Length: 236
Image 1 (cartoon, rainbow, N blue to C red):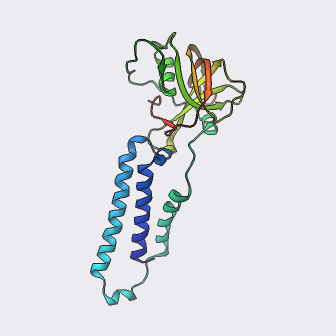
Image 2: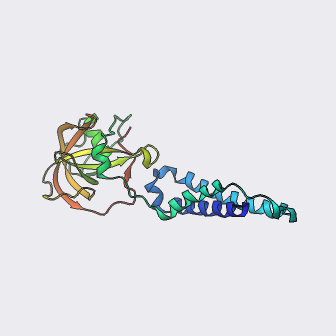
Image 3: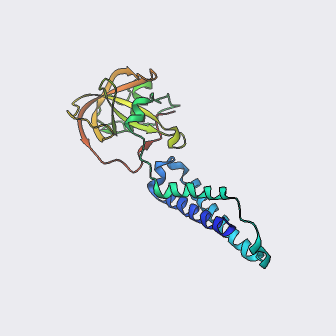
């Protein structure tokens, strides 16, 4: 591989990173807040490629045609490029959820909620308020949560969202157990919009004994997966 080929690979890798950063595809890899860093990284790679081409042309001489090629290991630069182009990993789902303990931790505080009316909450937000705030401001109010279905080894249905600290590699689940008017057929990894009410009932995660609150379901309907399948709340 010569310098021109290296520059071409750097340019293509930078363009792929920019594409991932500009589209929702980056949400499969990292949390939404890291999007600016992806865009910056892609820009730096493209600028480096352009600088390499400019330097080579400016300092080229006839004697340069006899130089030894760069080590073949340089072609490893093509691997992340092929991964970005050919592999679009699915979001982590029910298999990871039932084999990993809940990541629910006590938050530093709870943002104020509307005093009245129905509430649309994230799975992590509901779980944190139900467990660590004893359901204050949730009691006797219609609640709507959206997440994917996971079935425990004993068939217990959970509504789950995976939470991120940084990227998909460190994703962990936050789970809400479902009771009440549960659909008779639940498909693991299927996404549901669930309406219900707060329940003081609790259970323990069979993986790590972490707390899992219940939601009393009054209605549920399947929904398509959201653009961002991960949840930044509920893990601390």
